[in-house]
Length: 194
Image (cartoon, rainbow, N blue to C red; front, side):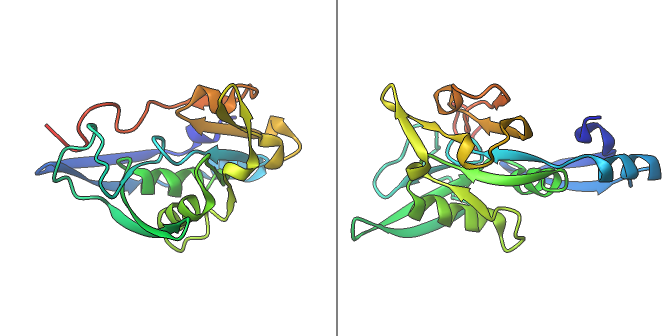
């Protein structure tokens, strides 16, 4: 049985200015549903970062999908080739809620084609001390195919039938059958813009 169908919840939302604030209220699982969820073998959900969970740009580069003046959710400072670079990171709306929910049913793994120094810093911020994003794979774990990076999911787990991947880039998982393609974030519209 699909674990996502086992959780009942009521979501109440309201709009405040240009940013949406959501308050979540939960209806507890029935004892039968809780038991079913406890006996299901946990699967692995592999999550991409850039244009899936977050969108970022660095010093001097503002992409047209970010409305000028839109504040980032956080700023990272990393050294790349001994040069300091600031990344302005915008999180996909409700990413914290999403991660807290799916971490109840899946073992979460970050797999990004980004450099480790950047990807690890983003994952640390998203994890926020909860310990749900401890397993991480980066560019060095990818293979180069057709001029792009393909994620080698056998590095995550030998049994590929226990893995799902959520990614915006079809080329990243072209060799993998259990995939969910997600629309690019922020979907070519101004982030938080009207």
